[in-house]
Structures are given as C-alpha cells and as structure tokens.
Length: 495
Image (cartoon, rainbow, N blue to C red; front, side, top):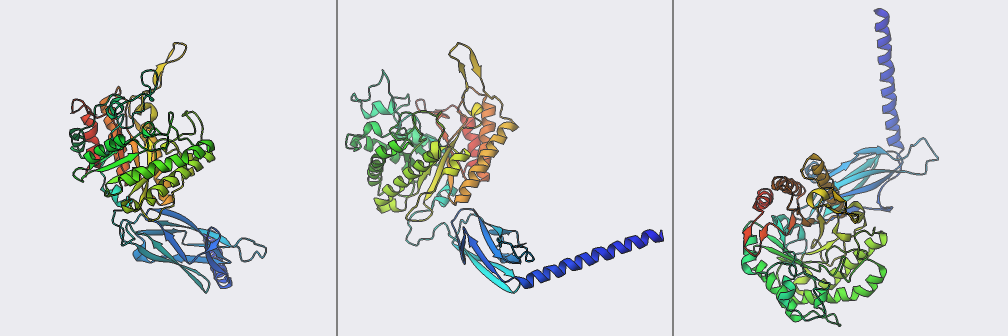
C-alpha cells in the first residue's frame, strides 16, 4: 500500500510540473507576440458592417502568438464569437509562413434600430478593436415604406390566384394570334372572372397576402408595349386585393418564363430578351408608380434554361438569373416615386431552393437598403405533395406516391427549410415561399392537414411564411372545399 501511495504521489508531482510548464509556455508565447491584426477576405479591417439579417462572417486573426477576443456582455444577445482564443503560428517555428487563425462572428437579425458593438482582440501587450455595425430595419430617415423585413413580419399566410391572369393557352384549340377578349384570356384555364367577392372571401380566412400571377407576352405588341385593356384589368384585380389596405398584393412576370416563355437562361435568350424584359417592367412600374407599400413587384416566376425542366442548370444559368434580377431592380427603381422604395421580390433559378440554386444566387444591388426579399417555391416531399402516378408508353402503370405524411416527410421539410434559411441569412436578405402546398387532392385530407400544420410550424420557426398554390376555395361556387387546410394554416400562422 505504501508503494502504491508513493507512485500516486509521484504522478501528481509530474502532472503538476507539466501544468506549470504549460502555463509558463503560454506566458512566453504571450510575451513574444509582436503582430496582431484582423482581416476579412485578405484585407485588414477596423470595422465589420452587417446587414439587417442574420449573418455569419469568418475573420482572420493574424498574430504570431496566442490571442484572445471578447465582446461586451450587454451585446451577447445579438452577437457571438467562436473561438474566444487561439494561436496564430507556433512561435517556436521560425519557418512558419501563416500567422492566421480564424474566428466566426454571428450577428442575429435586427428588427429594430441600427446598433453597434465591438470585438476586442489581445495578444501579449497588443490590443486591436473591430467595431461591429449592423443596419436596422429602417436606416434612411426619408424612407416612406416599411422594410422587407418588417413586411414579412406582418404577414400571416398567403394565397396564389392561379390559372387566371397568367393563363397562357396554346395549341389547336387556342390560336394566340386570333383576337381574344381580356375575359377570354382570364377564363381560358377554367377559372371564373375574378370579382371583389372572390378576393374578399379569400381574405376572410386571415389571408393577408395574395399573389396575382400575370403573363404579359401575349398582350405585348411588336414594340413591346402592353395592351392598355390588359394593364387596366391587372389594375382592377390589384385594387380588389388592396381595397381596405389590410392585404398585400404581389404581381409578377409569370409564364413569360419557363416551358412556354420567351425568357430563358441561355446567353442567346438573355441577349434577345433583356431589353424586352426591362421595357416591360418599366411600363408596369410606371403604371403603378403611385401605389403604396402594400403592392409588391416580383421579378419573374420559375425561369429555366430552355423549355424543359429536365435540363440541368450550370453556373452560367445561375449567373444569367442574377443578371435578369439586376435588370428588374434597375428598371423598377429608375421609374422613381414610390418605386424607389417599394419592396420587390427576386428569385432563384426555377424558383427552387435546391442547394446549387441557392449557392448560385446573388442579391441584386439596390439604391436603398432592406427593400428586396427572395421568393422561392417548394412542393416537397414531391411524391406526397404531387400526384406521381400514371401510364408508361408501353401501357404499364407506375405509382410513386407517398400517401402518409410521416417522419421521413418531416425530415425532407426540415432539410429544405434549414438550408434555405441558412443561405439567405448568410446573404442577409429576408425570404418567403411564394408557392407551396400539398396540391394532390386525391391524398387523404387528414394527411394533407398534417403537412400544412408541420410546414407552417417550420415557417414560423424560421420567421417566414408562404403562399399556398390555388385550391382551397371554389371561385365559382364561393365555397371553401378544403377548409381543413385553411384552418390548419391559420392556426399556426394567423395574426
């Protein structure tokens, strides 16, 4: 027993000596630090400027010894740093060529006034302070409109007035070159003429944003001028939505893109279509120039490389989407008036939130802060939200439908919600889901309600919302035939 006790005591002495030696080495490292600077993307900084949205920034700490960093306790609710201490190079290695280590700075979304903090770095006897500035939701004292962040915070949930003003029929039964009335176009895809009663009924369920998709190409002449009667009808429907100023209205460029459109993401299409696109948005913006902040413009719908969803996009496609979005912003802002501050929506390739499209997306440059948001679409899990069954060319049948909204389905929702939020937080821009829904009416209503409840709960978790694609309400009979879904959305997202 005495021998064992002696060995144990000896081990304690060795450990204590090692700890003391480590502390001594740390002290020596601190004393030897002669360099301390902080860089972002290779450039030394004294200030870090952050947008309204949540952002994550990697700073390079350039030091030749041990460094520490701290932020004021009062600001830890909105700014965080990791790690708080580290080493640059090993000071005993005279051949070391990299003095950098890295620190992550996370700044949370600011829904109030602009704010400022500071990160203090120390290394040995050296001190470096980096000021952190974050914009607020309204930083321009002359800004008459609410920011896009504020707007989204005021939204409950929305509805798409689909198959109406975006109707774009073609084929043997519809000659687009033949004369058709505005009503013919509006009703060509089976929906009745929109009335004030229809809009009022939709709004009565707590819906406070309605997207009115519009296809413009068939209503433009050889000089790219929009037919006056068509523009007037669009305005009538917009006024139905905005009547009591309790609801927001989105108008966009719809089937001018996609499978049957004149806008695609090839270089050839962009060269041919960019001027027409800007001319179109200049006309729309001028016509609605005096409208208030409840009217929103959305650049375009689900733009594709060509007429096929099967074409895999490349970096060039993503770049052209960004160029179209910038054309849209520039055209609208150039019309002045309320359009200088109007909240406007841009979107990704195909409006998807698949990771490559998110990674390839760039926020357009704007003349004022905080008046752009991103609209993406999602109908996943695809085989639950849509009908994926039918007959093959050889007469055999297939059925890939998922009929129960289970944990695997929830995992799909969790995945796209997390990656969408992460990407747009990184870019510092708000977003919403311009289209979503379990739109296969043949699926069990109880399962579709589970989907609606879960997706709405995730949207609320991430401080966003979405607009259901059509359905729910029969615009001919004025009856809610999928009221259970509406009630589920309202229960979670209603204001």
